[in-house]
Image (tube, rainbow, N blue to C red; front, top):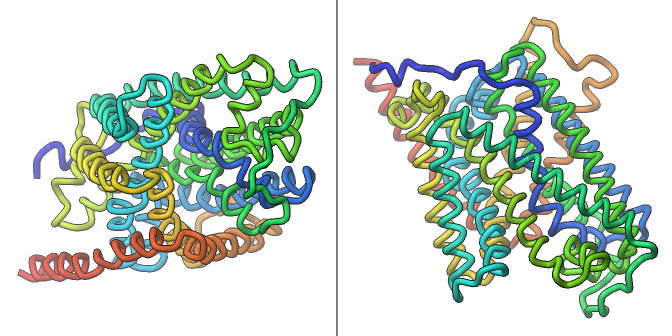
Amino acid sequence: MNAAARAAPHTSLSVLDGIAIIVGVVVGIGLFKAPSLVAANTGSEWAFIGLWIAGGLITLAGALVYAELATLHPGAGGEYTFLSRGIGRTVALLFAWGRISVIQTGALAAVAFVFGDYAQAIVPLGPSGPAVYAVMVLAVMTLINLRGTRQGKITQNLLSGLTFMVILMILAAAFVAAEPATPPPARESSDGGGSLGLAMVFVLLTYGGWNEVAYVSGEFRDRRRGAMRVLVLGTLTIMILYLLTNLAYLAVLGLEGVRQSPAVAADVIRAVAGDAASVALSIAVCIAALSTLNASILTGARVYFALGSDLRGFGSLGAWDESGNNPRRAILVQSSVAMGLILFGAMQRDGFQTMVEYTAPVFWLFMLLVGVSYFRLRRDDVRPLLLARPLHPVVPLLFCAACAYLVYASVLHAGLGALAGLGVLLVGLPLILILRRRDEMIAAE
């Protein structure tokens, strides 16, 4: 075994670094796309804000579950480790396949498409411009992260700070506006009497990504409390930002204006600063997309390190690079698969929507299984635990119920895209069984 294979993650991340990662992953593209969809399915401003609060509380419940799991089982494996120890190695390996082929790579492609769409609005590159920009930005952010974890986290702290500045601009616009702007012309699809359940799907999609911190839990300087502090403080920070931003949307546009707006943040800025501000907003969305993309690359490839340690067939893929303190080969493979999905999405009507449909049901299925694993791991562990009554078992049960509903809702609303993602997941099952059988035969020799 060479030095790279024996190398392991360093404890180089502070709580502030972790919060920057979680905010960078979560706060971004969803905040510029989801509010109008949420408003279209609610009947009042109170219901609209109530859904964002409820989504934050569900996210906090999941963060508490993950914080305890990450504290008791820190490392680069994240959900892979939790599932392996809580349910079994086969389920964990299936998750690793799903993350490689569907969840993480699909999410990277989706964010790259958002960057491409808004960059195309600034400097058009022809009909294929969004896909060209998507490939270019993914390549650049991959190169930054290949240099090492230090470069990746410095970039993340910078981009998270810029994203905060964008949100502050939106909040300032709400205070500057003396009175609500005239809503845009009504669209035929506008309807305030839609489904609250569907609205919650969009809310939780916007909160999604906080679980990525589990993949760097073993790299916090504070091994005992680092993951808990990052997940709780990060989630509360995101919840406050979302509430303030959506209150700003309502203050400027009103609920009907938010419902009818195809680009709610753009309309808020335009109401205060005029049409010229649309370019500034496009740049702002690109910054948010960069932040999400960088954080996802930084955390996403960590699962390969755990997979390579557990399965000989992936040993070289999971090698840790000592000089960069990162899984360099895994980052390359992850981005290569995401590049393929970008090309696939470019052939569809809407690349971003295709990637969301592709990833959602598989993602929530494994989140549900992590929640189930929690109860098994909690029962078997004799160490002091972080969640005491009355938080246990109410919090993990709430998390599991929310995940189960999201599996149902994502399949119901995503259609063929969801079936494609589930189909790719199932394709990995025979591959996993073959590799496990091969490992068992080698071990028996």
